[in-house]
Length: 421
Image (cartoon, rainbow, N blue to C red):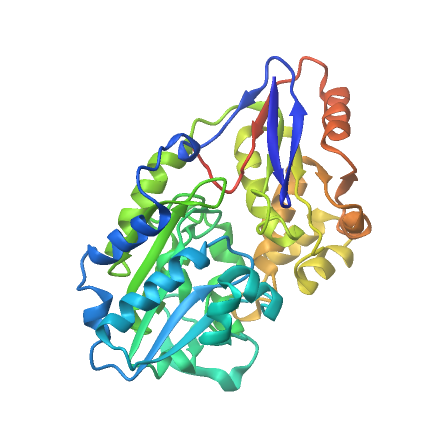
């Protein structure tokens, strides 16, 4: 049996043992009867729990459209032109700013903007890249339910209308992406992001993939979206080819809930109790760095025995993805030291990328991890106490040697696309 694993902008074909389970979402089985553009347009014309965005735009002077950054595979070349046209249908003269929601990621480069949005759109529209560390760019909107300060980009806080675009997929601690995440962490200050991603919340058993009920991280995010007056969302669901297979538009809560229901239906898989679990971060753009690739490792974590081996296949040509994330591991003796230290950190003392470090440390403390990546990431992975392997074939050979030739193998070709039940 062979399986194709997304790796950067390519695919790796891997021959599997006869007893291997391949765990995939239903997204690839869905037959799209309408074009991507038709699905988006239809969603905008039939919003959920809201008037059309063209109606909301009437009479508004300053409109902010929040969009995702270079780390998110939102097909903005498809969605954004249609969205902007719909807004201008109600207000041709509106002053529109497109605010790129970087959260706590590095800034999106001009080249990445052109790749994501298209040269014409970048040339014609007014884009601003959110910088979470620039406190002078933030406006205070009060206290979050958790007690943390809510500070967001002034451009959104001072706008007459705030809308967003994004996509919905399972998220390893917020439950799902999309909707309210455009505000927090999307355009929030680093102080607000740190508080929301504190060790107590990350450690909660409610802060898990596919769960919103009782999720403390989601609760803060939803509150932030309401305080920021996020009036309308356009969220899409995509398949492995990064193509739109469904679109949901309208009220920030109601449209997002409908989208999450759809994603739950197509993404849920039955977990296994494997000795070895192989996964990827879905290829480009999500597998550009180690930081982002922790997400798919949680899917493998849910499918493997407590002493099982995880094989992560992520190109990581952009290396670690976060200086603080990298240094947390490099400066520690081992992953156990990282986990023990982070669990003692109070909300107000949260540091950069602590949340990602906490989840990675949890996995490394309980599982052997063999990491297949671009050779340029080898030293960084080893600095972070992760075993680098040059090819997935070699990683599987090593894992079978350690677990036995009859070891149970589970493969999750796209670890960020599934909810393990």
